[in-house]
Length: 314
Ligand code: RIB
Image 1 (cartoon, rainbow, N blue to C red):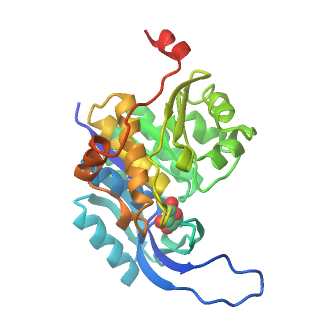
Image 2: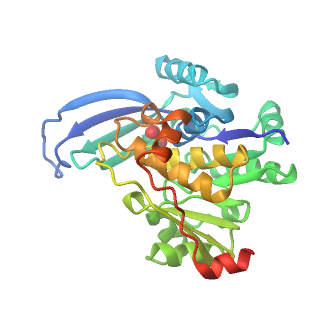
């Protein structure tokens, strides 16, 4: 079966200020740098999957403005199919991002064109022909539900990153084959603080739950059990923006290429670790060669599978 990944999601221009620490309310402080770059959780995941060797189409919306033209050029340069990229009367989405010296980020998004909610026939056709549909929560919920339902009707594997964190999203969860929340998002959705307990709880509704935990790697649950623990490489974080998007994009790219789940998870984790060592969102994402080199040299690719789960899958 042809393996084509369709990412339906947001495209933003990221406006990034680096500063030593967060400003207090009412405080004016000096930053150390300002940069703009391509972002948006949807565009980021599309770029991550394409750089990892995936055959990727992007369904998104931009404005008829300079930022929109910039994002369109990025997608073309990454050889991503943009037949589903729509130019709207609304301005291109922007994200105001603060990155502090510890590499952590704080993000405020103004959605603009990403609010466009209609799924047109050409976009429906792209989804119907895909092997995987990947969505996040920066587009209108009704659009996401329509796209996921359409994917399900055509036997397309559905992947949801439930970010930015929002709950309840029961209808979306019911339409997802795989979800990739971070620990905070998983806790919010499951109503349980512990990441492993949240993964187990969510896996009673969603077939595969991958909870990303930053420097602590990731944990995977299926059918109410932890089935894998995925380590993360020890790196010094420069900018964590887009790490989760990298993880999801690379995971799906490797699965679409036919990799075993454990190998796809190891590649996703290695890629996310590489991303945080570089500034920017889409700009920081590694190529397939870089991921393979990391796996071969400074990465310990053993995904740990608890004995109970091993026995259950034999
Ligand atoms: O996940 C990171 C992304 O979130 C940024 O690129 C920003 O645009 C927001 O969508």
